[in-house]
Image 1 (tube, rainbow, N blue to C red):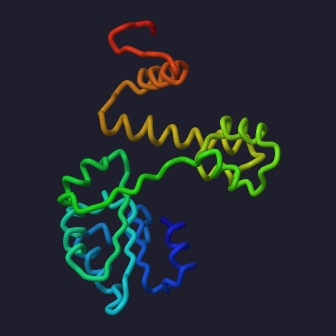
Image 2: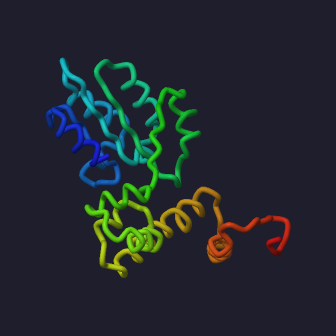
Image 3: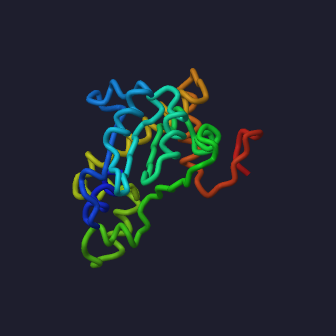
Length: 201
C-alpha cells in the first residue's frame, strides 16, 4: 500500500488527498474505535477532489464493516483495505461488506520482474538460481548478497503464515505436528499426495 501511495504522488495526487491508517500502529490505537475511525476519515476528506483512503489491518476495529459501508456511500472516496489472514479471508470480507469490493491479488515476482528489479539482465542462469534459492518475494531484492538476512526474512514469513495464522484460524494446538506435515508437503512438491494414505504413490 505504501508503494501505491508513492505511485499516486508521482502521478499528481497531492499528499492531502491520501489518508493512511495502520491500526497496528500504536499512534492510531484510538482509531480502533469505529466511531473515531469514521470521524477521523471524514475530517480528512477533500470536498472537491478524490480522497484515497488506506486502512491497514482493519480487523483491529470492531464493527469495521459498518464503517466501510458508510464510506462507500460518500462521493470521491477510493478505499483500500487490508486485513490479516489470521482473522479473515477474502471470501469472508465479501460477506461482511456486502460484496461491494474488488480484490487485488498480490502475487510474488515473476522471474522477469525479479531480473528487472536487479537492474541488469546479465548472467541469467545465475540469477535464476538466486531467484529459486532466495524466493520471489519482492523484499528479497533489498537483501541481495545477504543470505542470512534472506533466510531470517523467509523464516519470519513462514512463522507468520503457518505457525501464527493457520494455527489461530483453525485452533490447532499441536503446532509441531502441523510443521511436520508442512515439511512433508514441501519435500514432496510435484508428487501426488493423499490424506488417506501414509505414503505417496
